[in-house]
Amino acid sequence: MLYGDAGTRKGEVRCAVEAQRLAVSLSWAGRVLDGPLTRRVKPSEATWVLEQDQAPGATTTTTLHVMLPKAERHYWRALFEGGEEKSHIEVRALLTGLALQRGRALRHGAWRPRHSTPPR
Image 1 (cartoon, rainbow, N blue to C red):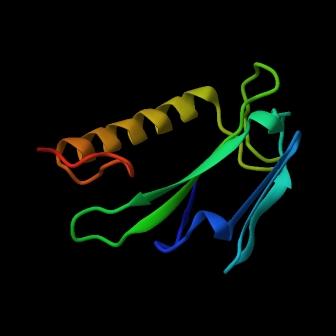
Image 2: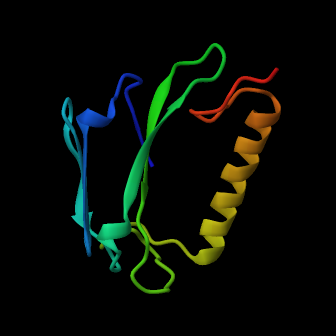
Image 3: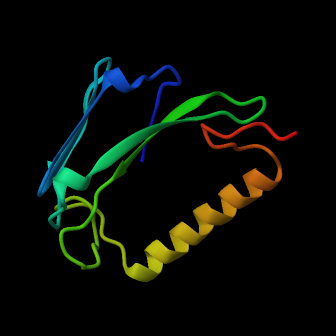
């Protein structure tokens, strides 16, 4: 996930996925991410999406989600070669915490998916 300016549009994003490399650039900021991956991915199946996040009374941000399907079933200790490594226990704890935060925001109406319809 990358966070960017609220006005970011899909035409301003360039996401290049190779079997062992990921590069992301924004037309207004240049290259923001570029490096060799620790494992192989399936470039033909990779995809990305922009999500507009706006909480009541908060600043709107744009989040770039990049999905990289693994070429083989294996746990990745780091996304990029030489990057910070995490154990599967640390990752599970992080993901559980993020899910809990998003769940709380959903219950309180502070987060709504980009394409959701307003409640009636």
